[in-house]
Each structure stands twice: as structure tokens, then as C-alpha cells.
Amino acid sequence: MTTQLNGSNRRLFSPWATTACCAAMTGLGLLWAAYGPAIPQLQEQFGIDKSVAGLPFAIQSACSVVGALSVQMVLRRFGYRAAFGGAFLALGIGALIIGTVPAWSAILTGAVLAGLGLGCCDTLVSQAFITGQGRRGAAMVNIAHGCFGVGTVLAPGLLAVLGAERWSLMFLVVACLMLFAVTGVKGIASWKEPKTVHSMKVNRGTRPVQVWVIAGFLVLYIAHFGVQSGIGTWEPTRLMDQGHSEIQATLAVSGYWLAMVLGRVAAIPFTARFRPSSIVIVSSAGMTLALFVAVVVPDSAVWAYLLAGLMIGPIFPTGLTWLMTSGYARGGTFSYVVASALAGSIFLPPLLGILFQTHGSDALAPTVLAVSVVTVAATILVARLLRPAHESKKSLCPRRQFPREPNTVRIRRGYCTARRPNQCLSQRTSSRS
Image 1 (tube, rainbow, N blue to C red):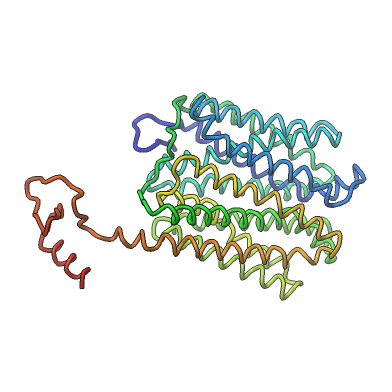
Image 2: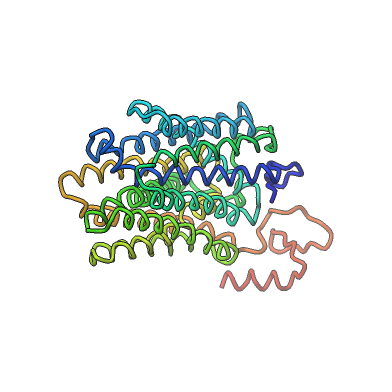
């Protein structure tokens, strides 16, 4: 499996480098999902409450936003090879510190390094896979984030088998995966990314429309990632409060992350047949419906969160493809959107920790449902804003777009390059009527 960028003959990734990137995404998933089962152990080990125990995850998320925002600058200055290598090293060193140094200050320091590497790695892999595979971009980014999902499944699953008290082993595994990923850096091209992220389509709208579209994507990703991380971080605590054992709660959250993987894998064949916008809209609506069931029928929380994970899966990678095909992923917009997704992990898990202190774990389902409704609203807004521009591109014979060539038919001051001029004229006439 190789990756090329924008039709270039030079490979961006060698097969080994592609494998290394997938391994790195698996490490990201392990790192992301290891905090949820570790929170009760951190409380016991350091004598802190729930809101403080979630601080490393919040710090990691905040630093991942900084990492995502700095990607374009790093690429323009140092190139892909150095950017990937630095991201892998920062993430691996941070995970190593968390897993080996039994001190609260060291854990917070490791979370800073791991967060910076996480944001850079996530943005780099997503951007390179989408722009470098053409029509296969949507499928490739789903595969990459499917590997991320595999890591999110393995973390709680292994902790359920080994025991949650061995949570530090997950961070050591992450460090090993990053070391493996570093071995593939030589297979990444050293050339630099242009200042503008190339889109597969060009859609030039008015400035107010551009602002609202980008703002809609930002809100979509902030809210979506808030729901995703809120469930993944606090579902074990909620289920244990409902009377489930620690092993059952850990396996349930592992099933939640597994459902996300299955959702991304299931979306791959649909990316070639349906628009990215349609997939994101259906997924957001399904996520909201599942969370509504969790609120109305609390005893069905395990199955409701499994369904929510299944619907959440395709939103992030397919939404990034939607952004690219919209034509608005120019300049640093792509990094801003990825950073906003990571920022969604900052506000909701700590907020849920605070709500748990005052209202108990019953606050989990209503809170994530409210944020999910925001996700649906933002998705519909973006779809409505992009619909007129999309429909305007259905014209098969745009005027004044092609130079006059032999066998070109002149039609009312415009040129038609269709092989069947009569068909083109009839289509234009029917569209006017």
C-alpha cells in the first residue's frame, strides 16, 4: 500500500512507512482509551477525586490541539519526514514517562509531550492519506482511523484481562509502537507540503458563506469529539455506579471502542457510493438516537453506548473527506478543524467530572445527548450551506471554461466540449426549463 500526493509520481510513503503510520495510529488509540479505566486507579494511588484524576487526559487533549495547529508550519519548514519523526518521538517519550515514573508531576509532564505528538501525528496521517489517495482518500483515512479504533479496543480489553491496576503497561506498549513507527520514517518523503492543502474540488463561495461553513465544521468536530471522549472516559465509572463489576465495565467500554472500529470499517464501501455529507448526517442522527435511548432507558446504557459508538465511528474520517471535497480546506483550515476535534476532548470530560461530583454519574447520558444534538445541528447547517454550490456544479457544459478546439461546438457564447453536442444542448435546454 503506497501513498502519493496530488498525482505526483514520487511516493510520499513507502509500504513500510505506511505500515508504520498505521502502527502509530494504533498507539494513538491505546493512549486515548487507557485513561478511562485508569481513573479509579489514579484516584486510589494518589488520593485525588474524579475531577483531578481526569486532568492528565485534559492536559493531553489541550496539548494535542497545539500540536495540530503547528503542523502546517512544521511541514513548510522541515518537511514530512522530520514532522512525522518528531511526532512519533514526542508521543513515545511522553508515554514512556507516564508508564515508568510513579509521580503525579511526571504523569502530567508526560501528558504534555504525548499530547503534542498526538495532535501532530493525527493531523499528519489524516491530511496525507486524504490528499494522497485521490478517490481512495476517504477509504484510506477510514482505514487509518480504524487502526486508531483497534488501539482504543485493545487498551480496556487488555486491562480487563490483566487488571486495571496494571494501567501503566498500556503506556509502555504505546512507547514500543512509537519506536516501531520511527523505523519507518526513512520511507517518508522529505519534501515539504505546499502552503495550501489541495482540495479534490474547488468551491469558491462568498466570504460570509466560507466563514459559516468553516465555523460549522469547527462546531461539528468540537461537539462530536466531546461526545466520543466523554463516553469513552466516563462510561466505566457510570456502569460501576449502576452495579456492574469493574471487569464488566471495562469490557463494556472496550466494546464501545470496538463498535467505533466496526462503524469505520462498515463505512468504507459506502464512501464510493454516497456523498461524505450523507454519511456524516446519518451517523450523527444515529448517534443522537442511541444517546436518547440511554437517557430514556438507563438500564440499556451498555447497548445504547455500543450503538452510539457504531454511529460515531465514520464521523471523524468521513467528515474530513467532506471538508476536503467542499473546497474550503485551504491554508491552515484543515489543521484548525482537526484541532477543534481534539479540543472537544478538553471541555467535556472535565465538565462531566465536575457534574459527577454534584449530580452523580446520572449526568453522563443527558450531557452527551445535549452535545450530540449540537453535532446534528452543525452537520445540517454545513450541508445546507454547501448544497447550492454542489448543485451548481451539475452543469455538464460550463461556459467560457474551455479553449476552442477542433470538434468543439459553439452554443450561445459558451463552448461545449461534450462528444455529443446535441445531447449537451438538450441537457442545457432542459435545465433552463
